[in-house]
Length: 485
Image (cartoon, rainbow, N blue to C red; front, side, top):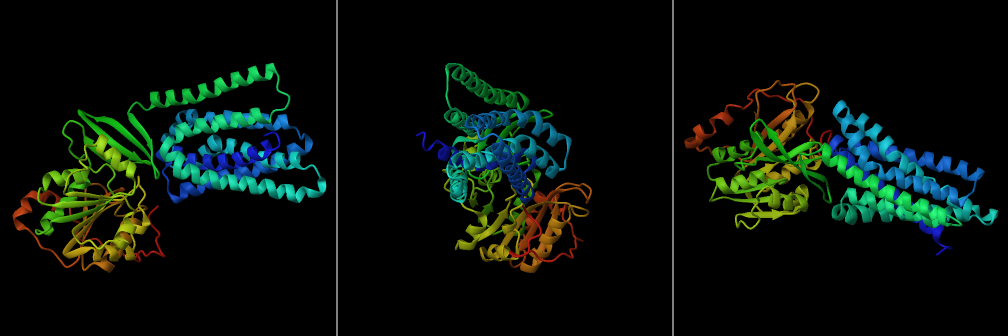
């Protein structure tokens, strides 16, 4: 074991460095989102921290090539890792509330919360090269072996954490595991252990457990509205209970955005824009079958099944954990014979399905980010192919009509017009055109098949149509998508 302890340490520290990167994205996502900009920021900060760690670790070990010093560095990595749950509440949350500049918040918090442990873990490699280099004429061989072990560890850490640990254990428990592993490595690397050292390490271990537990306590104290904090393969999901006036809501939050919410007393949908999906019933009186891409808490499918007793609905939701939460927290009846659930990516489903539908509903936002692969000309061609002759597609879009946030709706309006012969646009609320808001884009495969008898039922929604909207933007394609996450 003594012969291989340095190799084991290098491998595990490489693995834990990548696990921390994935943990960083999950911890930060409810506060700053998980867009490409945020991922770029996190990766950039972590790589910068590691680069400094490699450089400074090399300088330190040249002056003092001491195994015990390396042990202390690893122990300090365990300490800073155990601070992550505390800093989430005391730093990340308040900073995100003070500033709406999400990239700035991501940079500062990535540096202060995750940069330090990443920096420390990176110091292990140059220490290992120096301490393992028994023959100075084999420095290249030693350096290559250490780099290879660290990289293999990073690969293993990425796959094991991403596919197994995060969705099954959650990031909070994973932080505790990282802390314990680093503590064990520190203990293993220390030479000439005595009683005094062992007592000190027992105190350190108790302190590390205490810091992790304290992080859990202050998170719960500062977030009493969060009743479940769940990690899935794809997202960190918060189930919240909120009161607005006299109404109590249960919500599902992914990243910074509320995906779904219901009135807890009546189980009615809270999101107004969802009622616009009912317009299919007015514009295509023969509609019987519906496909919804993006289930989240399944509030609309549940409503649909209750309202339209003779109609069926298929739902495509990539995240199986969301479906489970929809069943346990939001009253979804997965056994309803008129409901079929596909646990699959929405674009992949459209690419391969041979099903035909009268209505397709797209509501696939993750937080405030739209998956670009569902916004393109090619994707809409697949949507059109999946519609019956009088089929309609209705899409929820979060954008402003004018101003700095207008790009999304204008690009999408141009793209829908390029695919479908008739396109309509509705606003959900009477707000300023420059305000970011829910907008409903509706397109017809072969025109309208109106049920005039239902005009009065849907008049309030129909009156919100925007009849003079124009767009000069290019169409969005799979190769040119300046919108989305």
